[in-house]
Image 1 (cartoon, one colour):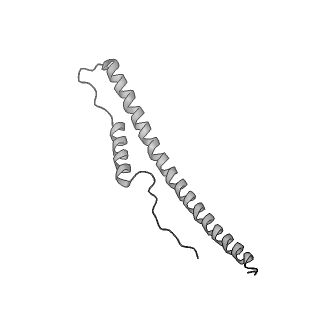
Image 2 (cartoon, rainbow, N blue to C red):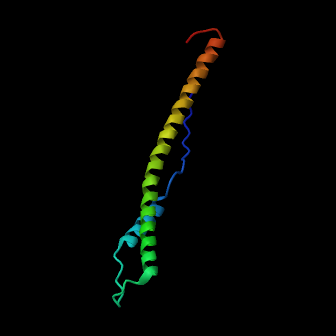
Image 3 (cartoon, rainbow, N blue to C red):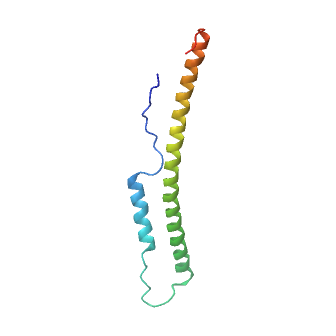
Length: 103
């Protein structure tokens, strides 16, 4: 009665994309070598440091969101599968009642 559909729903990042993001985060967090002259580098260096930090934070957020979305997609898939099964059972009961017999 119930035909299970094994269509894979692709949600989130692939393993290669996750590895690339994790590698990028490690590189952003790696200590930057100090300028040979000993100076602070000026406002451009400060801006680059802030941008690097923000990009690392954003990359970590993307990875954590991806894990949550994958779990949510699985819950939604199982919920849909359950509702389809219940709909088929209800259709069978309605059909039986229309024929005038009880199950």
